[in-house]
Image (cartoon, rainbow, N blue to C red; front, side):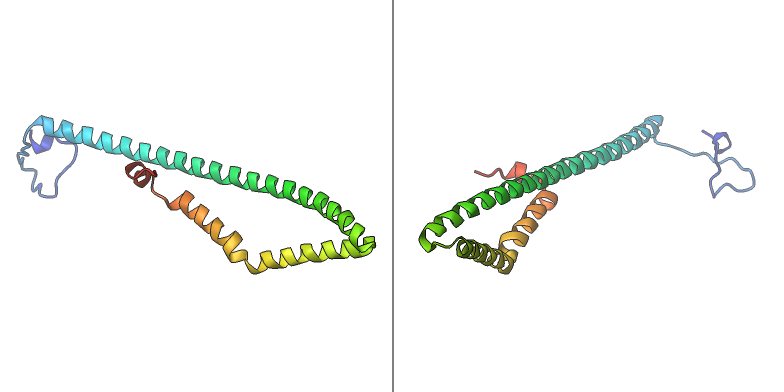
Length: 148
């Protein structure tokens, strides 16, 4: 193949002289083209994989948040009814409904204060652990070392 036949010029092309460019064979060019096509396909597939992985992790995160919200609403409803039950149970011992409400209100405030004090251990740390496992854990690690 002569340099003048190529659609581009090399920097070493001087004074329109023809310089022979020697390739090992035409198969090497075909192999390079196939390699570039495979690299392009691989990059596209990696992009799709990242999108699918992100969708999977966001789905897990959102479904967990919805589950937590539902459990909080149900727990608050149960706490409301149990607090009324306890008010009427304590009323039979104290013989004063207002004192019963005050006792239950004080207990609920103490529980809320205890939750506030231990929020790092019971709220923040489990949430950080969950998010770290969800977003930072490597799937290859799981496949190679299955939990028993």
